[in-house]
Image (spheres, rainbow, N blue to C red):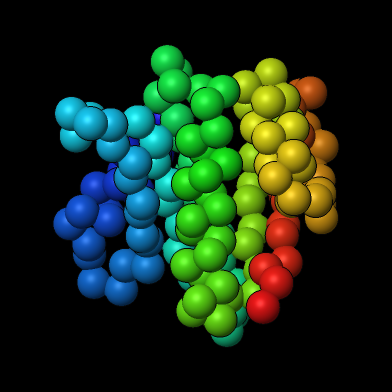
Length: 131
């Protein structure tokens, strides 16, 4: 979680050369309920990385994450984005992150076994953005 907060700080007070962007959903009281952090993948012409997608625990299961991600993808399509790439842990949310991304159209394109610790693989997922 500290990494997600560091990325958000880089969005709000960007250092020179910062390529991080964020989209934040807020409730009627302007309280953040979901957050996506993404940026252009270095050395590519039209690929992006999704660094974090977080929904407040009490708001999970309401479609907010999928809606926010769809909005980010639509924006990237408008910029000529071709691919979105995500790295996640095989154990993140007891595998829930992996299941979520697959449900919204991402497919596994790579895996490094025991990357984070024994039994916890690094999974790379990607989605080709339609024109």
